Image 1: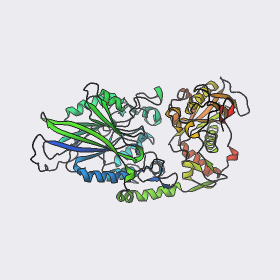
Image 2: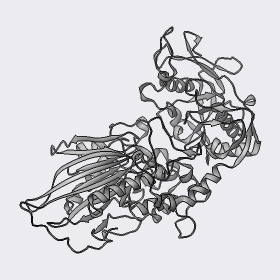
Image 3: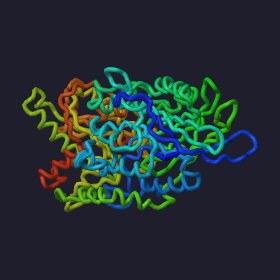
Length: 598
């Protein structure tokens, strides 16, 4: 921490400590003799949803990151922007915070969670995200839901390696309902004139953790609503002398939950916090993976505007909150707050950061390029969102085999096994010839695990109808543009499931809810409403992700703690060859009035 600040942490049951002074104050800066009351300007910089990105690198393509928007990614780029702004405005006049989802998302992050995991004992590797963020000089970070993907021990190890606090006012111990992490962070900035400015950062995480990572947190932690915990802490922070209150929230602004009533509280509540809780000056928004340079929300009680900003994920953008304060009525008053975002594609990577994490990066590149098998022909996911493709069939084939083997000898051994899979990346591909870990890992970019749930034929029909909302209604005879055919209503690719083990048509000329026709077994027999099936399904979907009907309440017959990605990698290692002729099948197709679209 810079020596011109005093820093305080909120109470945390993890350490048993109360409010603690952890920094020292420097001598006052020389006061300038200026007319009028003292004024002070400072800047709060913010990132969110970094998802394990340090370098401007794509581990799945083994090349520099690129996308259609010309964006760059990673903390090394963020560091350069931060250095520039600190040079412009003065290091003592800036703070740097994050809004969560830090340690999951790339093979770099995965390697140090699963292959050579950090321990928090002082021995072994330091997490590359901790190394980079410490070197850049982060002051505080809120926890995101993906921080819990690898379990609480791994998160605690990461916490121990960070030189900054991980904040979560609404992550509580289940038994005591006391904070499991520091709820807030307080610091003092020293203006040229007037007394110190006390800045508070309140951290809020996502209540969906209780659903998405139930296996890791059930019985151990609970996650109250963001609004309730903000209402609890903000007045206390003001009573403790906070002149400025900033919220770092791993929560979007829509006021909705995209997974329905499976989420115990509103998932995307940042704007509601601004509207309902007086005393907040600004909110750094995360989780939604959208870009909000500046949004103003009027507080219902005070009428004051709260400024919200969300920088684009993976380190594509950096948010700048600029605060102007004036001394009035015996204290600092926030006169204005503005926000903007800076684009990391305008700067080079900071060589200090790339050198610091370079060895770990090289180790992971070597790991993901290991050859583990061969493929008889190439498979690509380019058309997977609207055509039954072999690459999605491959995922379903491995999942079906895994669940079938797991249920062998049980009362459900003879029950037909179906499998769901989604297209997580349209650029995913398996080449002909040698196949590497990164090729296979690119098919399944999330740390989902596998479950087996019991469903009926009627429930399967509902499930498929819900999935088919993904397609844009297109009348018979109208031109079909594949680019406009999918993602109706903003539904992402990962929320369209293709199901194997049965066959069916999706009539896109019909309205959503009445599209699935000809649902049948592979031998052509119609699926009966009362028939029972075992569905091989990822834990995200089984936990309510996407709000698909029936599945979250369905009986769980089996579950696995290993990631599906690892299961597929292990299958390739064990079998040696991927041959689409052994598993590729036409399970579903798009139609209009019974005629195939493609």
